[in-house]
Amino acid sequence: MIDNLLKEVLRDEVLSSKYKITEEMIKKAQLAPPYENKVIEYLAVIIKSKMVEMHGEVTVYNKIKNLIT
Image (cartoon, rainbow, N blue to C red; front, side, top):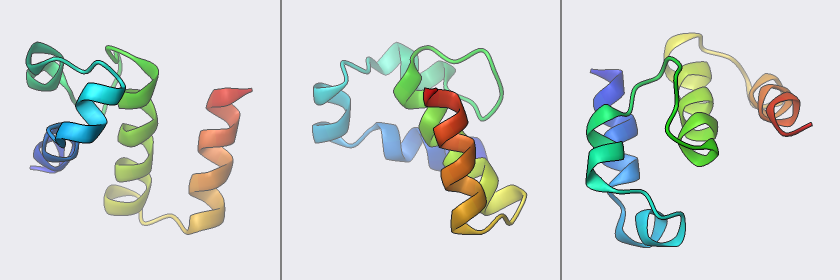
């Protein structure tokens, strides 16, 4: 169910064209690794942190920051 939220976000035309996310990548998208690209990974972490683990904004920010550095 939560994977569907990720897929719905990835289907946004602007997002998918800007980050070259294909329909095949969207079909495979899930909240757990492996991820097709970094954008999908970042979005998965945000959705999982907020919707599943109920983390606050600071924790989500720190998780994303750790992925980047």
